[in-house]
Image (cartoon, rainbow, N blue to C red; front, side):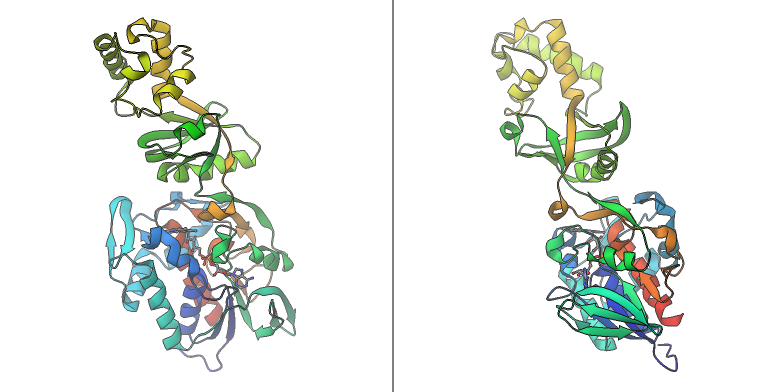
Amino acid sequence: MKMPKKPVKIAVVGGGAAGLTAAVAARYNGAEVTVLERMNRVGKKILATGNGRCNLSNTDLSINHYYGKNPKFAYGALSRFDFYKTMAFFEKLGIAWKVESGGKVYPVSNQASSVLDVMRHELEALGVETRCEAGVRDITRKNGRFILHLENGGIFKAERVIIATGGKAAPNLGSNGSGYALAEKFGHSIVEPFPALVQLKLAADFLKQIAGIKFDYEAEIMADKKSLARAAGEILFTNYGISGPPILALSRTAGEFLHRGEKVTLKLNIINYMSPDELEAFLLNRLRQQAHKPLAFSFVGFIHKRLVPVLLKEAGIEDINKPAGQLTAGERGAVLRILQDWRFQVTGTNSWPAAQVTAGGVDVKDVDQKTMESKLEPGLYFAGEVLDIDGDCGGYNLQWAWSSGYVAGESAAVS
Ligand SMILES: Cc1cc2nc3c(=O)[nH]c(=O)nc-3n(C[C@H](O)[C@H](O)[C@H](O)COP(=O)(O)OP(=O)(O)OC[C@H]3O[C@@H](n4cnc5c(N)ncnc54)[C@H](O)[C@@H]3O)c2cc1C
């Protein structure tokens, strides 16, 4: 451990993934560190990550997995505290790790709690003070020192401050957006936040009929007839719209366009394992074989049966119980189209409590990419989701928290 003569006193605001990493890094570099956390314990969100398994990183950390007004900003911290340094850091703390499909990295224990446990243990071993129920409501500066005004009435003084308060996603786990006002106080501007990695709301009056149906489909997000992004995998219809990993993956793009007031369309291909020609030949054959059966029933065994009446109505077929053999060529064409090009208007995303991540946040234009220090207020640093950087689903958001946290902590301690 490198020990400067007089330890610099650092306050880390927020004990999440970024704040805890910043605290460890600052202490490794000789600083005297206190974590101020508004909840009754630190790291609540870490426990919820990866369905309780903590997808802590990804083997492919290319910058095109990151978003924001200037996603390249993320490269600074991600290259300084990269995948290998992150994994070495966790290995040193005791986390054995494994790589799963899509390059997703998990602790071998499959327990998010193990990640938090080892971090808390390290903080304790290093002598980092953590104060819970110590939300910071304001920060002022006097004679070069920061004065942190706490929600509980107390004050805390420090020479450097790291704001690691997270965004607005999952406020039940602590991140209520309060960090934005702290940043604005020092002249930072905020890129208006909106929920990301979140379910989509759809305009359709039949959603209750098909809620709960889960299948492997392909989904595509479109605006102004232009394809914006597509993803495939398990999709779930819900009472309000649609969910599942591909939908969460597309929600960032959908949210961004909705936010700009554009009309967003979701296109579903529910038979994505056949080409249009294959599907046409298959359907023709099937309808011939089942010509005597009621039309709706002729799809049973091929399409989820709760979906069949909805799909046929959507294809504009009035009498869904007429014999399958009576389907006209035009009606067959409409059914084929619905099966591979079913369109919904996206009316919105679910809100903050359902979101995993915040898009938007503190504008990175006024933050030094190499050190995470404010360009407007020397001694003030930022780390994690509070900044206008968010990543794809798959370990990218936690990696951003670890990397930006480590760099902020190290820089604040040695500057
Ligand atoms: C359900 C869920 C699952 C997820 N799964 C994954 C996953 O598997 N992999 C992945 O990469 N990402 C995942 N994410 C996203 C990831 O967890 C976050 O991007 C990451 O935790 C952000 O870290 P952070 O430290 O910046 O913010 P947070 O984790 O939000 O931490 C901020 C902390 O600051 C505290 N705080 C806020 N305001 C104040 C204040 N004024 N004063 C004091 N303290 C304050 C909060 O209480 C909180 O403890 C998931 C998110 C959710 C909600």
